[in-house]
Length: 405
Image (cartoon, rainbow, N blue to C red; front, side, top):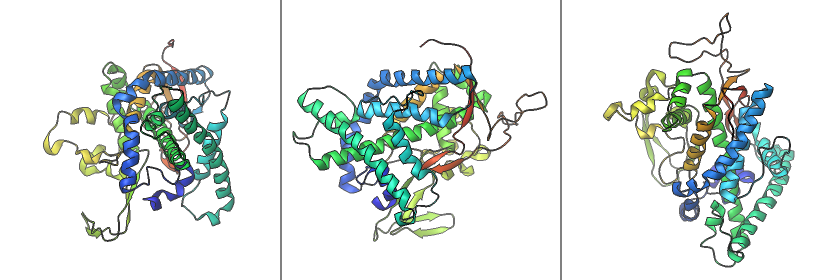
């Protein structure tokens, strides 16, 4: 599938697992599976907690100052710190607001070169942008390849027992490390860095927004934190409404693949197919008249249903399904559940600007018949490499109580 993801080559690299096919994909998936296994990720809980407490400190700052902030940006620095810790065992200090890190700044400038694109134009239509991407990508690669080389040296010659995803991927490597291996490892780290921080940041931003305007759901989350049922349902419902990524498949000529739809049969031979999760997951034939509403309790009710009343597993696919599902989905769920468990009891979020809650003459929120606060204007995602909230999810936050870390 290189043709499908080729425009992202400066972010994910030419040998990314995203675009690999056949035996090459199987080799890469096997090499990195162990690092993303649930039982292994649990060992990173202390690291994730450490980064999460830094996130709480930043929220405390905005709560005490009353300053508005971009929740996408704030959660993005959190997830950046987590993914680099888990995959590389490196701390870039992305959450230090008063000490911006050069690497994180360079990396986000690289992503910003894609943010305004509505179509993927050939490079010769935007030569300056392509030159800028190459320069920024070169600096990112210098840092990440140095990390790969250091991890190899530490593991093979110094006996370092790092359990990062990168370090585990080196276990079966021969004593000699080649340029090709370094480049391939860099491409995978780039892919994990991009997908692992951007998508989880979007998930957290939309979830706290939806919870802020659905008081009964927020209360359910707070009431059920002891067994994490509340966060699990809220996370799943957020991913249903606002899937942070998509997937595409390119069928080979001669494969004879056809698809049957309500409007007839279509031949997909040699066609690139985009699986639009946001449409699949809002299908009124499956989700009824609340298909476009934030209703986390549907997933708790679904566990007790059987047969035709149960939501089919194929109708929820933010991480996709089958052997090519998202390798990092367990990490994303672990991060989200932990962050919600720490944040939900302690803070109240208020959306400002686009998507803010409508109020009556007394300044009180106006509820609709489904228990959601009405909004003065609708929030929506826009393409910025991935489908981010259009305004970066501008918020104000207040403390429900003070807690010590």
